[in-house]
Image 1 (cartoon, rainbow, N blue to C red):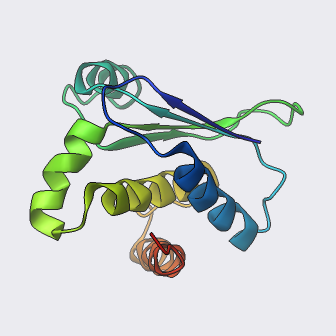
Image 2: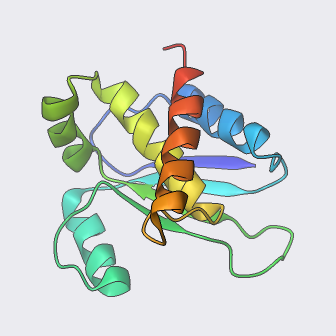
Image 3: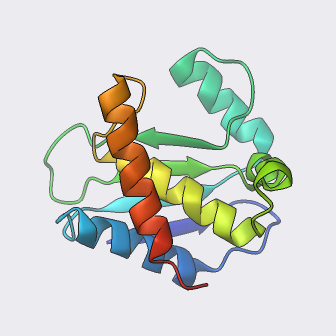
Length: 138
C-alpha cells in the first residue's frame, strides 16, 4: 500500500507519485511493502530533521525504515516541496520531476540503501536512482 498525504499548499499529483513509488518497489521486488509519503512545510521538516538527525535546518527528504515486520507498518518518506523547489534552480528540472527524484531517493533509503556508508554504496544508490528516474514518463 502506498499512502500519499499532502500537508502543504503545493499541488501534489498523488497518482503520479504513487506510480513512481510503485515502479521503485517493483524494481526492488518489494511490491508488498507499505510506504507512507508526506509532503510537509519547511518548518515541519526542520523540526523532524533536528529531532532525528540533529541538524537544525530544513532538508528536502527524510526517510524512516520500518522497525518491525508487522503487516501494516509502513516505511515513511517525508518531503519538503519548498526545499525541493530551491533544488530546481540548480537542476533546471520541473518541480514535479525534482520531487519524483527526491521520492526515489527517499524510498531507496527506506529500503536500506545508504549513500553515506561507502563510495561503493553511494555509486549503487546513484545508479538505482538514475535507473528509476529514467522510467518516469511525466
